[in-house]
Length: 342
Image 1 (cartoon, rainbow, N blue to C red):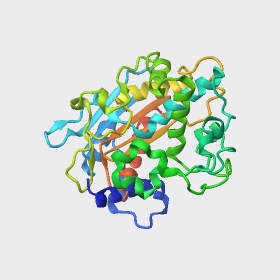
Image 2: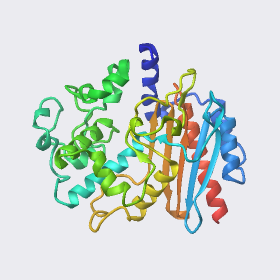
Image 3: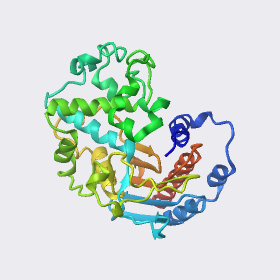
Image 4: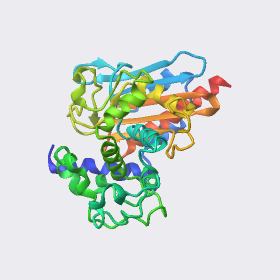
């Protein structure tokens, strides 16, 4: 990928974070919003593919019903392989939920404290991350630390794959976004540091801890931490509007099937992922989305219909319209489920 392409793709992050500020709404978004609601989830998936998504997987777990799977479009566009509900998908920031649960478990076991500061764990970052001696682990979990987001640094995207090896460097020696606990700003740097803290506390990798404490107990056999752990043929291709490249082989962290994400999300929301005392400690969200180049995902639990919905879409774009379109599609799916349950 050229530097010019990387800088263009970098802008996804900014656009996705500021959708509400867009002054021009393209017709496709208006159309997707105002079309009559279909009768079934599958019809909504087919409609979304008609709007331009390359491929899509939807998993629905409604109480007292067997899980349902819906697909549309391509798993692999070039080879004309249809979307497969069992495909592995790059879940991006949904992985933060697994880290937050791990921090909770370690706090409950008194192996760390949410009230301890970043400086307690990394004294060498005092002076390099502003307010390191005031920023608590809880603030980091909740994105209330003020630590700059390394993916907001344009230099990071000039050679993303290489720079990912030392991503923290792109958040150091910068002014804080705000004073600790006096604002909110989504920052991937928070979770980069939290993962390192878990590694240091344990003396082994946070991946092994997540596997031991979350994946094995929940029997999540189709959740992985790296593209190197899986057969590439099992991974859904990822596409970026305007480019022919398939981003499937790029390393973007955790991968999982929609079903595995759905099982985890229900366990998080019903509390079964926690041991005694942990649910009261848990300081983060119960739903999440994820976005990396070629992959966008949404995973939510809706209490009113006791349903988990996971949506994977393998198309992203420069302007963020694909993200908007995915949110519209997701909300329409939930409306269909609500209508059917009433």
